[in-house]
Length: 249
Image 1 (cartoon, rainbow, N blue to C red):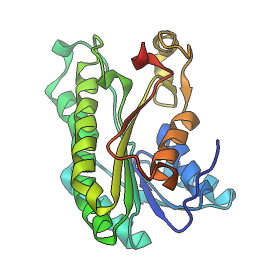
Image 2: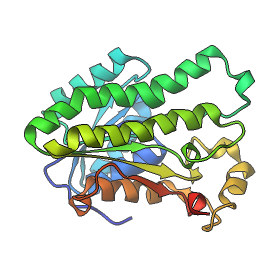
Image 3: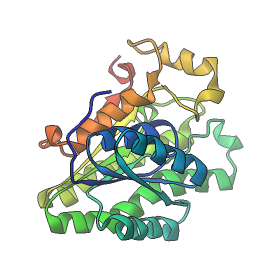
Image 4: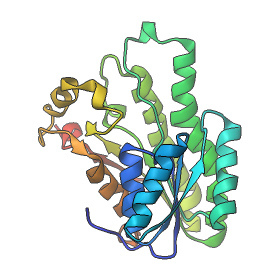
């Protein structure tokens, strides 16, 4: 996993206690950023922090429960209290329940939209204005390839991430003139702790793409690292497929 140059910057990564979020935290820290590892599980979060520090990076765990507006705003306040500011925000926290539309309970619908849509909305609302005042910042939202096309059983998850794609473009328009770049990545099937339960279904989904295999969390993190780095200085409002080519065919 190649590093990016982020010395002196502060990065808040949600959902950073495992999977894509943890891989992203490791990559940004390797590039010199002070990474704030946000998540609900303190033990897993501290393990990510310890791994970063073991490799010479700078990281702190920040407890976060993003299932409410109050929790998202509290995370923003605590992140600033710990590090003084946030220069990079990676909205990686999310849930992805699959199943028939008619089987989705009211609580499931609320949970998906609370975490996948509302939490990024409230975090950007809390943190992007200060980035704009300083004249620089980078935000990356983690979406999904199934926000681009219809898949039976993925209406709830896919629609929540389709909302994230539109938010990405709207925020690029809103904050870009002040120097804050907002972009998104759309991962395809990725091997993480969260997708382990999918078993052979993950491989079957991945087989439909030209790459023919699932991604590693590090491959998705590399795309995020590019988007938050100065190498992407002219990239605003992009929704980047990192799906092995699935949405291209």
